[in-house]
Every structure is written in structure tokens, then in C-alpha cells.
Length: 149
Image (cartoon, rainbow, N blue to C red; front, side, top):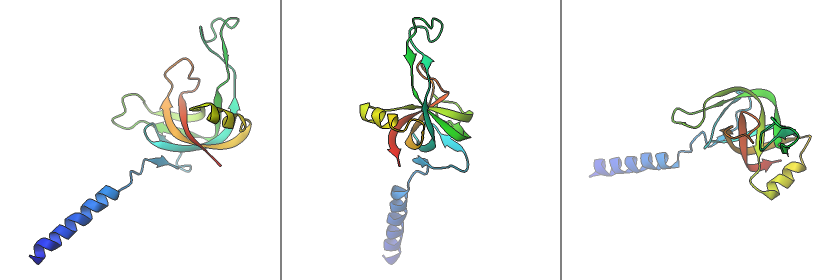
């Protein structure tokens, strides 16, 4: 009976430890290693926030007289980083030596806050993803979850 109770307690302890285990990729704060991971992992990146003009629709620069001018937020990093796709990632592939990341705010409030940081240093928490569309002007973008002080 004592042996069964001891095994039961041990089993509960092991299951509790497994349930409480935090995924170490939930937040990447690896400033020294320069290695980050694509979505769904959450990353914190830091650099100087700027805007730069890019031509947009309909022809993305082929017809500058009629193409829209877009001014996305761009985060200039102090040092190049590598953004790694996990083994199961079918949407992204590794991008090495990233020096600029387009910042994608998720609403008007974040856009206004980012406007106040132009030409300043900023830390941004969010998920990294690879460029897909014509409006994506850097190889890697970050969807903002939070702007940190």
C-alpha cells in the first residue's frame, strides 16, 4: 500500500512539473546570440525607429507618377540578427543577417505611439514573420504586441 501511494505521489509530481513547464520559445530575449525565431514565438527586438518612402500600388515603383507612396515603420537594428524557422514551419525559411525589420502596428493607437518614437530607440515585443506581399518592404517584419519602455 505504501509503495502504491509513493508511486501515485511521484506520478502526480511528474505530471505537475510537465503541466507547469514553460515553453522557452515563448519570449525570445537573446540579444547576445542574435538568433530569433519566427511566429508563433514572441520576440523582443530593439533599435532605431525610422520611416522610409516606398512605392506602393498599383505598380510598386514601375510607374512612380501613379504609384502610391507608402511610409512604413522600419526598425534599424544595432547588429544583424538571424531569424530561424522551426522544423515544422511551412510559411517561413531562415533569414540571416537581418539589419532592418518592418514594424506592423495592429491599430491606430499603436500607430500613434510608434509615430512618437520616430528617430528614437524603441523596444518592440511581437511576432516575426517573413515578407509575403508587395507592401512588405523588408525580408522580415514584426507584428507588434507591445511597445516596451
